[in-house]
Length: 287
Image 1: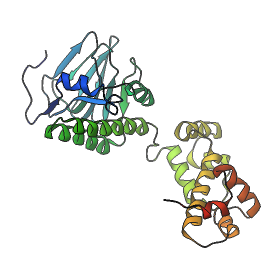
Image 2: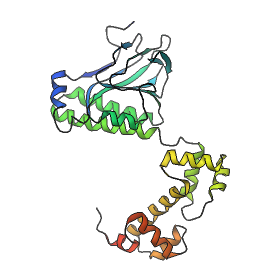
Image 3: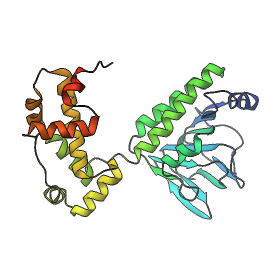
Image 4: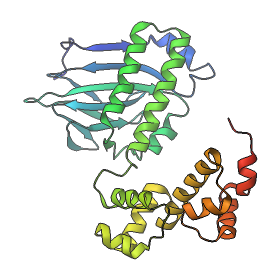
């Protein structure tokens, strides 16, 4: 049963639909626009059913209690740290658990870039759930959106919340890719970061974190888009850039600090990565 009235300490902002249509015709806000946003605390009897889906993409983040979601005849439980992203037009139902009603932040968005942002989150209409690692950061963004719309809904404010929504969606996309603390890939990445000035064998690193070399390679491709060696090289190049920018060390000295005794080899790797030699990079006017 859907509750008709509000919830204690609820916050709610609904942009009037004429303002929504006008904003969707303007430059920035046509890309992504917040149409509704809110916060419900211990939302007993909260429930929504939309057999035809919604005109907007819906994002719900649970920070306490529990709720449920029905999509494609399957019901799943949502607990703290769980997020729902329902693409526009997806038939669905959701609500608070009876004994332990959820506390949620939520936002509805429209715009021509929303589908692409939803795809970046790894969401499909039949798989609309995320398990969040950066819950505090994401809820802070949702709080910022709601607070902004509570002030006013001027065109300038809608532009501001569009930027916040873009950041929210990209944070959700990144959150699922960031390695969780203590996992094999996170431990391996930390090990490589601590040994930028050394050499690491993939097999030895895999044994150290307790997985096979092939599995470690797959984990790195998922987390970084490349392999173990490529990631270690990117860390070396990042340190080299910092040393070139902030010290007077020679190229040969910098090469040694990133574990490359051959300055010519270092220079070739640096040029391949950056398109210029270390000396030319240092001479560039930056900032």
